[in-house]
Image 1 (cartoon, rainbow, N blue to C red):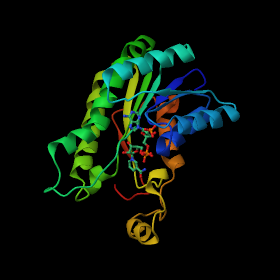
Image 2: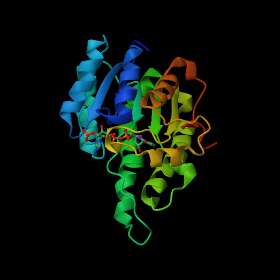
Image 3: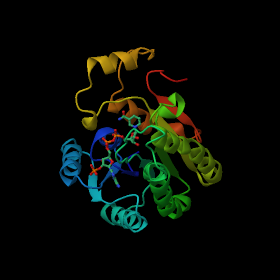
Length: 247
Ligand SMILES: NC(=O)c1ccc[n+]([C@@H]2O[C@H](COP(=O)([O-])OP(=O)(O)OC[C@H]3O[C@@H](n4cnc5c(N)ncnc54)[C@H](OP(=O)(O)O)[C@@H]3O)[C@@H](O)[C@H]2O)c1
């Protein structure tokens, strides 16, 4: 993994931070992409470097094509190498709406992150991945695809697109040595969730066989494995990391 460069979108906090730190601990040079929170991104970079890893923070709104192209160019300039691993993780706000409340624009807001940003980024790194005949694209989905949560159809629909998109890209890119997989986390409390109430936790855990909430490192471990050569014969897969809540 030591010669690889990974780009983690939304790497400044939450699961992205865990994924970036985990990859860096395997020797991967990591680009921490963020949109607004420079301070948090810098803190992740600082933490990785303190532990002997290599990381750079680069601001870019990954839902905008010109910014994605700048992000990739800047990443290659800073590391002096092409990007080998892309983790499409960034997310915006995830409001819950009933069908009466939700609008088409609310659907589009989610699709920006689950399909538009991954598409822009993948297209931007594809030439170098094809040239190297090696690449890893890992899309972060969600267990909601299987749970089908009510009052959340904007998010559930958009995350469902990740499943088909991952399989289609895998079919197209396999012959170039590029694998494409999706990791579907369960409820994994991060900064934005604040304090999760005991009632919420108990109710969520009722049908989780492993009887605990997810931690960012659970998701990060799966991403690291899929990024490695050990996963070279795995592509087009949708892997749930949620203690068995869905099968
Ligand atoms: N945590 C969970 O329980 C859970 C469960 C299932 C699936 N997921 C999925 O896991 C992924 C990470 O979720 P999370 O909970 O870790 O989210 P989070 O803590 O809210 O972090 C979101 C990240 O995305 C970045 N971001 C937001 N808008 C962006 C943009 N336009 N361009 C670039 N970066 C942008 C944020 O950076 P700034 O703060 O700098 O803007 C931040 O680093 C998402 O795809 C989410 O749907 C999470």
